[in-house]
Length: 273
Image 1 (cartoon, rainbow, N blue to C red):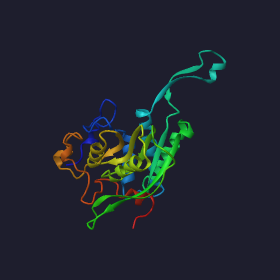
Image 2: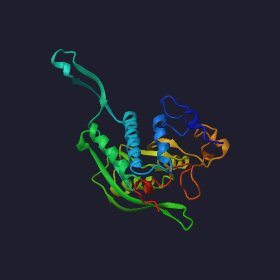
Image 3: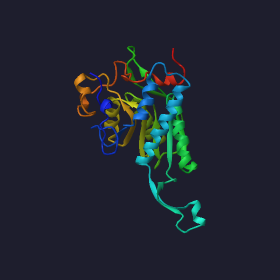
Image 4: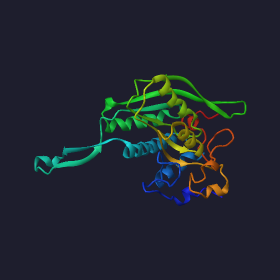
């Protein structure tokens, strides 16, 4: 039987997909975004359409993170009517422009998503408070092509992360190994503690959510458009996501997401063999 979560789009009080993974997990219930993502995953979707859709989706995803989790402040700002009347002011909430943020490019699938987030953040925050770091990583596999972890090859880190919001945009949240490796690098090599960490993914699996939740105890917030658990049994696919979390499966035997989108690093860089 097919997945039911997206056939019915049952939503919670925040307008997100209903699930039982915890408050740190935010799964979109945006039909337009799901439409674009479905097209992105189709075999006939090629460049330049691929990157155009990725840009569109990440503009929306980073907006969701900002609206949900970024600090705010109250302001009194003059409008063009202020010259005519003392009532010509907006008084209310805006995003605090002085929040310090780092977005992390995990090459290679994360190059474009990170740049999209970096540019969007510079549009609303004080530019000097926003920076982009770069990590060169790749999955490691065994003789059976099963994922065994992730290797770090190089890093370009522009400064400390103490007190900063750390955004890691990476399209496919499969096992969580690369993300854990990236966060460990900041904690153990760069040093310091970010104010909070956000994973921004197009698709995630139950295994990815479990790995991050168990490793970081909810200190990483996950924002994603779609949960894929296609290797779960038929009866599991009829349940609310997370209701029987231990029985959910979204990865095949070589840790690719099902139904997924294939290798987005290869797709986005025209590196398919």
